[in-house]
Amino acid sequence: MQLRGEWIDENDSTGNGLLWAWGEWEAESELIRELKQLGDPGFPRYLWHPYYVRRHGYRGLHNTDPFMFGERFLYSNCHQRWKPKLRDLERGSVIAFGSKRGDWVLDTVFVVSDSVEYTAGETRFDLAGLAPEAFLDVTGGPLAANEAGASFRLYWGATPSDPVDGMFSFFPAVQAGGDVGFKRPSVELPEQFFTKTLGMGAKSTPGLTTDALRELWESLVAQVRNADLLLGTHAAVPERRPA
Image (cartoon, rainbow, N blue to C red; front, side, top):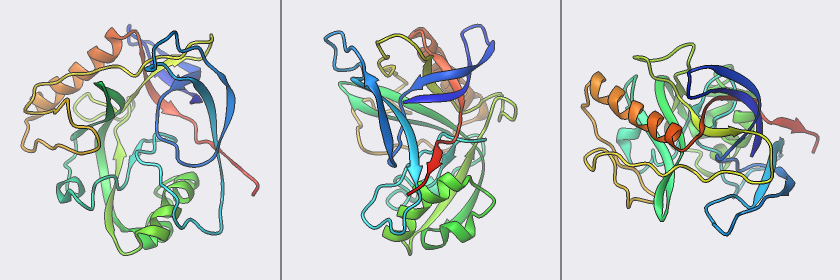
């Protein structure tokens, strides 16, 4: 996706402008152009611009989670119904979102700052004023339509200006430009914290000390930077267009 956002580079300097990043977006998008893959399917083939349209019904539609747009990253429901521990994460917890593509590749690092419980069918009411309107539409709409009775917990991510124990949420990114995107970075962590062969699933390791969490977070930061990528720290909320 092409996004307007902010980043931190390898020298801990900040910047802002157009970014390219991988991430989940289940609402509408438009094709900007085709990219070169250099014979490697790990590179993206297309560059997309996300936007959304408010709908009258969301039955059967997917929701976007994590939602990395706006003032803070949001994590709202993924795997929470089947993994109750994910509804009880403590402040300072670190979540690595990604997928298995041969290696395990990273999309987003989420550091928990605060949270609130809500009911899927009452998302717009329970989270009014607590999340962007775009989130209430593209995530809350499908949740209310498809999982109305389920209870979830919305987590807000830590930011560089409001970190938790020095940690903040980020996504791997590059500055926009050129005709080749970037491969999502492959990451590794000790087996007790991370299962490299786990694709669509979730593994948790409770009871870690602050120092242990910080060490794991710093390892993810280092691996992203070793791949010559920026730490994307903010992405503007995609525009809402008329139906």
